[in-house]
Every structure is written in C-alpha cells, then in structure tokens.
Length: 595
Image (cartoon, rainbow, N blue to C red; front, side, top):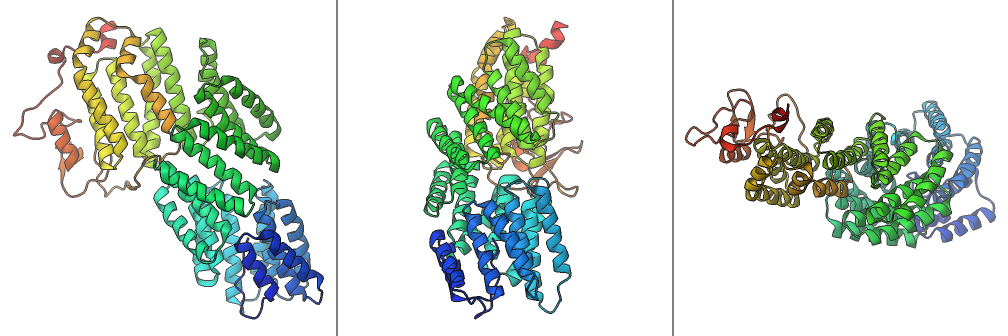
C-alpha cells in the first residue's frame, strides 16, 4: 500500500488523479482511469510499472489479495527492465503484504528477504529513494512479525516511521502511525499510547482525505474507548468507521468494525445488538471465504449466545466451529474451540459435564497463549470451583482456588492491570469471609479500594465502597453463620460470590479494561506502595521492617487497624491499635478447628 514520494513532473497526471481517487475511496473510478491510461498506449516502462503498483494498492483496499499477488509478481518482472531497481523492491513488498492476510507466511518471509538483498545492491547516489524502500521493508516486516513477536513488530513500525518522517510522503507516515497504533491497541493493550498514535494518523489521513486510513483510525479510537468503559464514544467512533467502510465498499473493514462493535455492545450489556452485529460480521466473512475469521466470529457468537441462555443456537455454532477447527488445523484456533466447548459444558447442571469443562480449562492453562486469554480461563475455572464448593461444602476446594488467584495477581502485576488487581483483591476478600477470616477480608477490601482510588477507577471504587459498607452491616450475620456452622451455600450467598465472578467474566475483555492509563514501571530505584501497588511519591510511610506505604494508604491503614501489614508494628503512635484478635472477635480458623 506504499506511495513513493514523487518529484514534481515525474508522475503522469492520470496517475496523480488516480491516487487522489483512491484516497477518496472512489476505487472503481480510479481503476477505470488507470485502465484507460494503459489502453491509450505510448507509455514508458517506468510509468507502466508505476500504474501497476498503484493498481495493486487499489486491489489491496478491495481485499483482492490474490489479484495483488498476481499483478505484483507480473510488475516485478516488468520492473527488472529498468535501470534502477527501486520499483522492483516496491513490487516485492506489495506481494509480501498481500501474502500475509492469505496466511502464506513462509513465502512472504522469502520475498521480504529478497527485497532486503535487492536494496543492499543498489547504488548509494540516491539516498532518499533508498531510505524510502528501507522504510517500506521495515513496515512490511512489522506486519509479518505482529502475530509472533509483538515487540519486534513494534520496533519495525517505529523504524519505518522515523525514516518516513524524513523521507516519506504524508500517506506513508500515516500508514506507519496506524501500524504502531494497531499494535499498541490490539496486541500490547497500551491504550494511552495507541490513542496518541491513532489521533496523529487520523489528523494526517483527514488532511490528505484518505478514507481507508480515516476508517481504520476511527476503529482504533472506538476500540480504545470500549476498553476504558466509555461505551458512548466507543459506539460513536465505531459507527463513523462503519460509515466510511460502507462508503468505500471495503468488506473486510466492515466485518472487523461490526465484530468490534458487537464486542462493545456486549461489554455494555446490550446483548441483542451485539448478536446482530456479530451475525452481520459472520455473513461478510463467509462471503469473503476467510475461514480463520469465520471461526473467530463463531467464537464471539458462541459466548454471546451462552450469555443469553440460547444454548441450542450456541451448540449449532459450536458444531460449525468444530468443523472449521478440523479444517484449519491451527493450534491457536484449537485452543479457542476448546475454550468455547468448556464454556458450553460449564452451563450444564450435570456434574460430569462441568468436570469435563474443568479438565479442558486446566489443560488449556498449560498451553502457550496470551495472558489475556489466560485471565478468561482462570476466571471461568474459579467459577466452576465455586459451584463445586457450593454443592460439596468441602473447604479443600479453596486450596484449588488459591493458586488460580495467585496467577491472576501475577498477570495483573506484570501488565499493571489495576482493574484485575482490584477485582482479584475483592474476590480474595470474599473468599476470606467464607472461612470467617474477617481480618484478611477487611484488608483485601481496603487494598482494592486504595488501588481503585489511586488509579481513578471510579465505578470500581464505588462498587468496593458498597462492599465495605455491606460487610460492616453484616458482621453480626457472619458471626451467627460461624456459630451455626452454616453450610457453604449460605456463606456464598451472603458474600455474593456468584455475582462477583460473573461480573468479572462479563467485564473482562483486555488487560487494560476500564483503566485510566497510568503506567508505573517497577525499577529497583523506585518505591512501590505495598497496598495500592503504585509508585510512592512525595509523602510516604516506611516501616521499621522495610514495608513502604504511600501517604494515602498509610492513612487508610491507620484508620483501619493502625498496624503494619508485615510486622504488626503500630503506624501512628498517637492513636490506638485496633488488632484483629480471635479471642476478641470470636472468629476462628475453621479449617484448623475441623482438623
């Protein structure tokens, strides 16, 4: 999709006009203009090659990847008759770019290497053109690596941007910005950075009136707002993007936007609208014949239908997905199918089927996959175990839940996903209630509260405040349940455990969901608060044992119990200590009692 920076007078007016029409999304008109230009004859070989390269860009925007490959390979052979080989490199890069969505990765890799070798052999008397092609190679390499090595892909995109800002056209600069924004948004889940690059891309795309880039920039803005929980703006941007792709008749763009819009509606709880968008998306993928994306659409549809309770239709789509999985023979797709199968089995009232679901999920945890996928597996495993705990009243089930909780916390810490940290600490607080451990229940709740407030997770902070107030109101009830040795079903109901897990599964989409972006890099020289996990700035409290608390958390702990969580040392010597003692609270460790 690259456009070379042409010196004034070098490009025929027909091709200049065709470029403008492509930018405006008037692809049929642009194609007719180029066909007429070729038919009139008396075209130099160089202009013919440039015309064919522009046609390849047009076909790419129409999702005609096979057409791109055929014409680009033909154009490469034509370009070998030119003295300079830069246009030959352009033809190779267009071939490689079209091979990627066709999943012919080995062939694409070979062509990228061929382009690199060809560039090395060019003379150095035209540094501008050399740097342009180096940027193109880096850009294509970014897309080649995006599914296997995200960090390397990002490096390639940033390298292409740096070169293009010095030697490229505005179109090329916008393309590199879009590549970076897509990588940060969909693969690294760094919303704030992705937002900045998407906005820069959109500004340039609007300046040159390139509809294709405008549409994709709007899509990223919609996705980021969805991750943040701003569904109003997420839908607005997505609808604008949808309108653009309808206008330029870009079918794969339409399918992707409908898929993303469906996910936004799912997150906002509008399941019927989500289902409508996803079914429309599936219809387009079937028309285009892209089996991987057809399977991906099935994945979303199955989960929506399970959520709606339409298990009959969910089973139909699951059967279709099984056939696709057998055809594709792709490990990632197989994991997706098994996960959906486990979700379906999890809905059964029969313990044997739920046991099969648990077995599948535990097996999936051993596979290599994204942390985002692992979070979904861990949450659903927790839900299955809580169902088992409710039925069996066996406290040993809690021992199986604890390592799953630790894995959730590890992932959240690694990605600085404060939403997951908050929700997981809230979950730990409720689990503590099940064994009548009020001390740890309060500590986990205060920790979740401090994180939510520190990182402006306002809705979550309000939810945790309500949980804290609910616990204070029900302390007497918990004491009565303990005295009566109440069954686990009663404890789970009082702790509202079912709604907690269900809410996490419903809300969890990406590791950065609902996070106001505030990256905190953990280095040795930085002090991290033990409670809210944020960097300690300005006022702090450092205990004799070495534990560090930010000012807000130290104040919160002082009001709660006035003790260090590590060594139980008094924090404020002017205030009373409020220890949680078993003989004072009447609360005992039930597991120890039952031994």
